[in-house]
Structures are given as C-alpha cells and as structure tokens.
Image 1 (cartoon, rainbow, N blue to C red):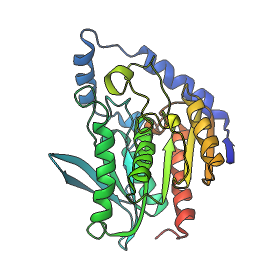
Image 2: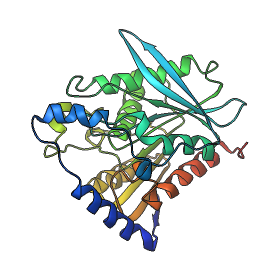
Image 3: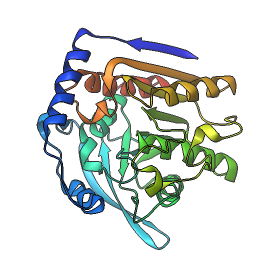
Length: 297
C-alpha cells in the first residue's frame, strides 16, 4: 500500500474552531424525521462550504432510469472529450445534496481536467438500502451508455464522500459480481464501509451485512479498480478507511491511502473553514491527472 500522512499546523486549530461552532448551533426539537426533512432544506453556508470553481461550466441533468428520474449536475472544465467522474455526496444515507459539495465537485473537475457528474441519489428512510446503491449502479451504467453525449472519452471514475464513498465502493463490488463494466478508478473519501449499529442512520438505511452495503464484509476484494482512499485523523470512521486500503492491497489492487492528520470527518464539506478540504480537492485532481496522464487543459 502507498500510504501518505499530510500534516499542517492549522489543521487542528481550524477543526477545533469549526467543531465548537457546530456544537453551539441550536438543535431542532421534535420528531427526528421532521427534523431531518427540515435539515435537508438547509442551503449550504458559503462561509463554510465555499463556492463553485469559476473555471468550470455547470449544467443540470436529468437521468432517466427505470421508474424514476434522478437529478444530477455536470461540471466541465475542458471542451475536448475527457474522463467522466461520477461523484456521490455524503449525508449518512439520509441527508445531503449535490449543492452541499460544489466546491469539491467543481474543483475536482478543474484540477483533474475531468468532467464530474454529481448525483442526487434516493435517501432513507423513504428509500432504504438498496435504493441508493441501485441509483448509483444504474447511473454508472447510464454514463457508459451516454458517454458521447457527456463529451466523455470512455474512461470513468467513481467516487464520493462518507456515505457516498460507501455507495461508490458497493457499486464497484456489484459491477464486478454482475460482470458489468467497472470504473477505471475509485476515490473513497472518509468512507463508511463496515457495520456501525450505533450510528443514527443504521436502522433507517441498512441493517444488513450485505457487502454492497458494508464492503468490508465482502469475502474478496479481488478484481476491483485501482483506488485512492482519503482518511481523517479525528474521524471515528478512520479504521474503515485503513482496513479497506489494507484489504485492497492484499487483494493485489493498486491502492493509495492519504490521511489528513488532526482534521475531522466530512472535511471536504467545509473548505472555506478547513484548509485540509481545499488541499484534498487539489490532491484528488492531481491524482486524476496522473491516472490519465494528461496535462491540464
């Protein structure tokens, strides 16, 4: 395994300040589901979430799948055909929206010289497992079939953050087992990959040990695409990232694990407040440029 630790003096102080601010925010009282619905309506605060990269163009897209239509947003940096990255937001399988992570998705497009398709998949508890997984898996196949329309060059990456990273990993396992085309690379940012029965989302989303829901339960990780995994030093899910990187390496999969010391889970959601988030967007972009051996346009 290629393992790298990234440290910076400001990571700890920035994380402390953000955690204090979040802890001081008022909590919503009442029914948990009603609180969840209200939380989904909140727009991201640019003082924390930043702004989309001005170098990219943004276009909304409707993906037609059997029995449903999914919202997506496409971020383009280059005019010539480029690899396509399918990206999944986090939110514990019950929340989150593509608008929450536009700094990351647009920045990955610009820094990686790729086209990013950011997907709004179905959420629990209305749509528990495997709804989000099927949305991700079928969107991956849709991208394969519509590559020319998206100005893609045939190369595809799948990636995501937290729950979105779990969906990306589960989709790769499903594609491998179903014999459908696999992505050329997967990028998993602070993924949740094992059973976590104490988490709020567990009963709502996936009280199951199926490997496509909890990829660390898979008997084998052989045959998966080369992988970049990002972890956070102050994240309870850090062991998931380390264990998955180790198992991928044991299975012969080229794997790079990058750990950001002294920062928190979901740090890519707060790039205006956390310099680790800004660094990670540039790192992912550099990784994709190296993967596809292409200079920036």
